[in-house]
Length: 483
Image 1 (tube, rainbow, N blue to C red):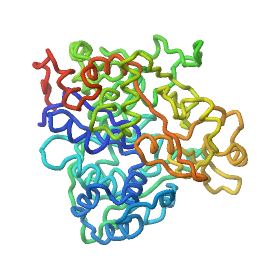
Image 2: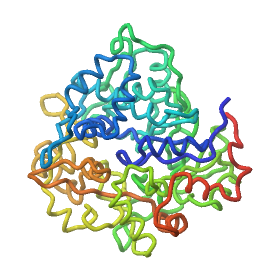
Image 3: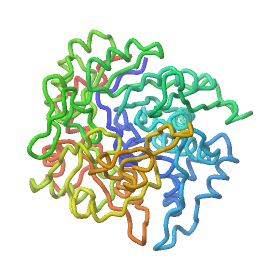
């Protein structure tokens, strides 16, 4: 069996964990991971911008349905790029009954991102999704599997159905995925459906390689539940502590905020690694493990290795806009970077790490000056309307719209549009009323310490530098496990 990686690169943000970053990590023998979040919009906007470098069109050439590629290119590709001062073309929001054009785009984008990450080497590539973003899951998974993705990572929820879904899609069988709809009962379950045979027709490829599934967890309770799930066991766990970047699990005890308005975590939020080991499933530790000493500590505690995100987020190959990247590194080097766990920022309801930077949504005045709009909808919640049809709402949308859909005005307070903000972070900001959306940057609590080591020279570093640093003095740990 293929040896387990010692290092897993985190699947960060929207496009931060780009195919370029994942490929660079994979070439070193570790697990490079692309972010699968909102890839349909990322690819549509890059096509609008003329597909710089021709990378997407090159990857699309390997897709088994040229007619789908032709339709996507006809709809979104502009050979001369997007004229200055114009908006990106709109991509429909996902829903229970998405248009076929959106399914085509989602499958193709996930296929291409993984294909590009895997090109030119024989290393392993994973893709990261959020269980909270359920509506595109089936189509995204299938696209990634068509490209031979080696691992699927998923957190921000309870991804109990994924092992069985991967089994079905690998076999070319129809699959369903349960969608959480507020106001429905267990007897009124709503699902999305995807049939590979209907989608590909005579071009159906079967069987596909079934990727490993690594569930991202923050408690022994969830690990035990998933290990016993009737839908199948995960192939591994990534155990994220509360200082990891991005979304964090809420505290297991009653919510208490510190003087800075951040959630307070306690003993109940620690994972019992001995009990976790007894489940017999490999695990990696994440959140504050970005150093050689913490890697050794993790392995000595029974882990197969570690997952590291924030250090990779600022390396040369990541998708963050270079100006933002350089400002963040500079602040870290000068000890002025602050990362705050914001309990209100994410529409998902999960605490979200936000780095405080100028001209971003972390600035209260900037946030309040933004006119609310919800034109992407990845973090919307499905709910049952009075007419028994399914509607969609987001606490970061205009307050009156959210309240009109049965939400409360209290739930809108402090919510930030992560969809638009994270796309702006990678240089794909939409224009609204002639003004571009502003970015939001997420990072782990230990980012400043790591950057001071890696960026101490000329203020820049590569993915290979991160890996060399993490593995320094621990060469015997590399690929020490087998699956």
